[in-house]
Image 1 (spheres, rainbow, N blue to C red):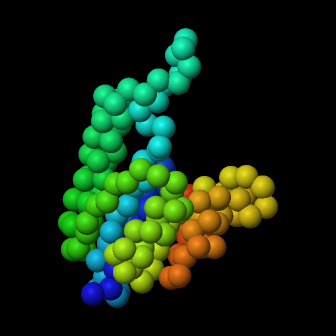
Image 2 (tube, rainbow, N blue to C red):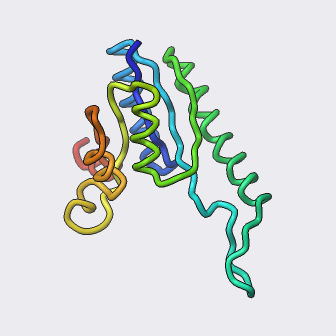
Length: 151
């Protein structure tokens, strides 16, 4: 079976990314692996004595992010698409590439924030790093502002 890796970061462009993913999944009869890469510093705070690790903060943050992913999973299932959610901690581009290889995905569908300088302004640093490291095609869904200009 074909499969797609769809990384989401819960930004305002997530809806556009999911719409594209549903379109491609239906067209190619593919399963979607909905991936969220949680921040490595989720349980850390800066206090009077420097950095402190608070596992309860990390646990609460992961619970909230998992709840968000489950909402998206339910929406995609309503669209008739087979979907599985994955939440990992790490460096986003590295995790995306590793999960793509682990799941044998045929395509990565992801968004771009369009922040930064030159390439980052067009793609975003995570998108750029995924493109550089991926062995499968990467479909970049443009930021919402670009889509609104085209409408």
